[in-house]
Length: 395
Image (cartoon, rainbow, N blue to C red):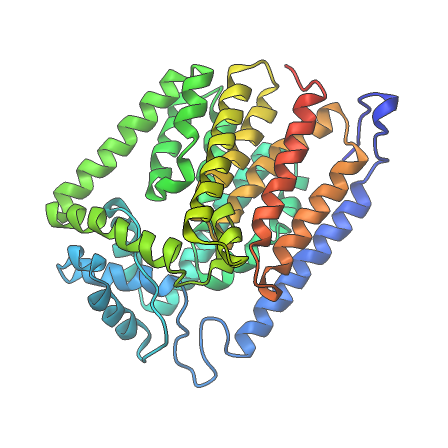
């Protein structure tokens, strides 16, 4: 991966192809060893006694079983859903993995529940991982994209938890990389991303500011068709349950910290982790959300290179939501890939490698610290993006 010069004053880094490949390969090997060790120690997929291990995926399979049994609305009844989770893995466990998704995602859950629990868990991960890898590969533009994608540290959390970060990153990255050439396809992918609506808060802002109305329309139609189809399939009670559940979810996780505020990779999570009151946390989150929205609107209305617009939207979308966990940081790989693509065309500056290294280190440190290190990683990514735009990243 040859590095080109921007100007002598910016001191481009020397070529990094071999060292970068070695670092990425070492990280991938380390991740594989960690996952294998977790399985052997009974910390992933199955316990030492051979019983299934409760993970975030448990709530998906349990929701799917309730749908297949003819009770889709009950996925939003927490005691009923918890009982289905216990049935899914065959034994009691502490805590509860809540179902907070809108009704359209019940289609995916039902399909997965057609398979045995273990097969579904592995199939979900192995089925969505290639989509993520392919999206980053297409963004970067050559085979190095595979290794850069596979070495991103949020992979570990998403893999072990059986979460949906691979799918979210694939949809976000796929939409952004096709937006200018295939606006309808991009809009469809943004519409599909509404299965996690909080990740797309700033997408309408960017599309409106940039005048991408075909993308906007395609996304709107896709989201509307998904909602309408799920209404026909699962009934009005399911949508009533979802809407009513929004307040319960907010109170449980954003106010009362059921999942530990240190796991929320947001401004709100940081303030609450440091002991701040709920009111201060929401003021801080509101300020960050407003700043992110304003920045995205400004960048997308301007003449910045499209790679930098895409990076700004990806980072801003993650900063804007108050509800963000480590597995959602898979989406951060998308803006970093766009920044990397821009850097390869215009020159990679030394500070950027240090910044990306710090982002990786912060995400890897998450299991060992009780603080939203992912939020600091997002701030570093925002600074890298802002610096490139300020340095004259025009078309």
